[in-house]
Each structure stands twice: as C-alpha cells, then as structure tokens.
Image (tube, rainbow, N blue to C red; front, side):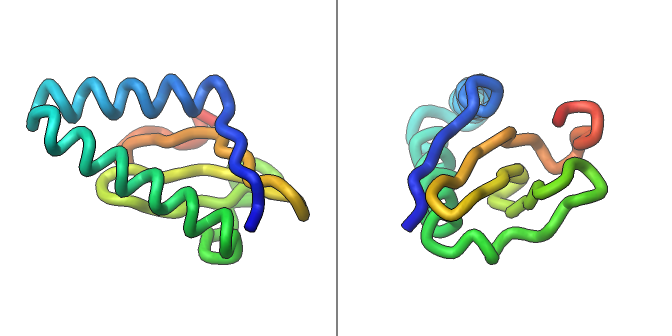
Length: 96
C-alpha cells in the first residue's frame, strides 16, 4: 500500500467540502461523506490503477469519482499524492 500525502490545496478542498456538507445536510452527513472520501483514498493507495488517466489536465495525473466530487492524484512507487478534491461541476483545468 502506498503512503498518502495530501497537498495543502487538497486539505483546503476537504475542509470546504466538510463545511458545505455540514451546512447543507448536517454533521452526520458530513462525517459520512468525508468518511467515504477517506475510504476511497485508502482504496487508491492500495490500487492506484483504479484511477482514470487525466494527462490532458496534467502529466501523470489521475482522477477518481466519489459522490459528487472528484479526487485528483499522482503517484510513484511509494506515495499517492492527493492534488485536489473538486466538485464534479467545477472547471478542473482552472483548479488544478
């Protein structure tokens, strides 16, 4: 399993996802949704080939959808680098 490193930018994305989810649907849903994202990160660390290649956005970039969000990441032989967690309707090119 790869180590997971979340960039500062992706950490801010997760904070925003949590805040929005809590404001809109409450603490319980926030905890569930962030837990789902966390479970996906663990799955990607175990099998990074689950991600879809996104070289049109950035060389070596992959994405994986969870709920209404998309996790963007790169990886090497030891580490999964989480670049961003963006809402599916966002302009990915602009935010990566």
